[in-house]
Length: 475
Image 1 (cartoon, rainbow, N blue to C red):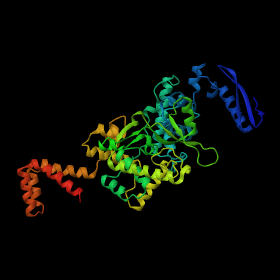
Image 2 (image 1 turned 90 degrees about the vertical axis):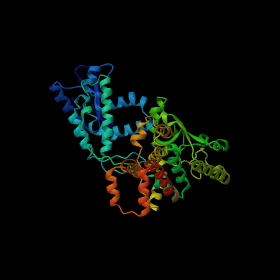
Image 3 (image 1 turned 135 degrees about the horizontal axis):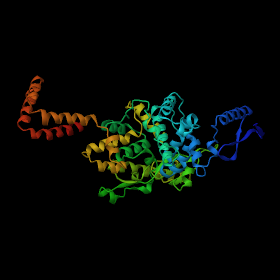
Image 4 (image 1 turned 45 degrees about the vertical axis):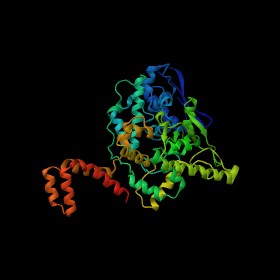
């Protein structure tokens, strides 16, 4: 067996037992071709020669496909047969990024039948030492692959192997099901409490950032939903406002998508794009496109009733845009966006994030990301609604109520302090221990009289506490 040169490539041709066709492989150098020839001869001598997975048709020769199917080949089929029918563009894009940069370069050539739990665990620990690859347009924060990314890589592999079992490519249990992932401490997202959020709004002088913050806090909207909000979805007529029925509809989100993901979903009729924004700069072909598309999930399409403060901010934004259109005329590029630049073009998520960072630094606020405002909104609404989870869920657009209670509900310190005060007034107040504790506390005559009154009439404790909180809030 010898290699032959074809153009700039070196080709080898050979046959495999139980495979009817000639197999051709090409290499960039003669050295690579000769190394492959040596490998083929050794495998043939040991009766272990199999055709490359790329040439095996799994439908025509399923038994051979079971022997040769590689991780890379499985993941390609997993994306095209499963992912394109189930995933949103964001899920498709992030999954393809993990496959391209974190899976295929390391274990893509391994036959799936050779995967073991031990091998996967070694692979995951190796990834933690490898350099991170940041998606285009995202802020690069990690120098090495983070444990949270390894967890997502594992989720992709586990799901793909489940499909391999369903498609009868893999026999036996899924080796990924019993993997022990590298342990790490999840960092809790920093979230402003109600006082911090109110102060941030008070000191914010940027009208665009303030409108975005009001929509996030008042309407529990995601940043993509805010930036994709169009005026035809805002209903703030005087008649609606008079009856407290002013509302907006969340029907679109603004998102920068990878062209490859959009193309794949478009072929399936699943791209769900309303509008594609033009390129602003004349440069080499971009790998991403800015679009208005349907929201994250079906439950994200929702109606949100508006507080008067948010209505006022929306009316100001409308008046400002009308004045700009009259002033600059045809220069204004009207995409009907609520949150828009002075020339009508859209803002992107990173623009708003930069504005928020500047606000935080200027006013010495606790650092948070913009999405944290949605968490703050959810927590405040749970608090003031007395825990009406369904009402809050209607605003947030979550399909499952536990996403509101488990993920987004950040219990405020003020609520916990109030709970401690209620515990004292309604439970400990009449116990012998409270008498001893009260005796050791310094107090004036009026405080002593109040304690005696509460002991004789404990039912008035809660109203007094509520009045105290109201008075504190008005200071």
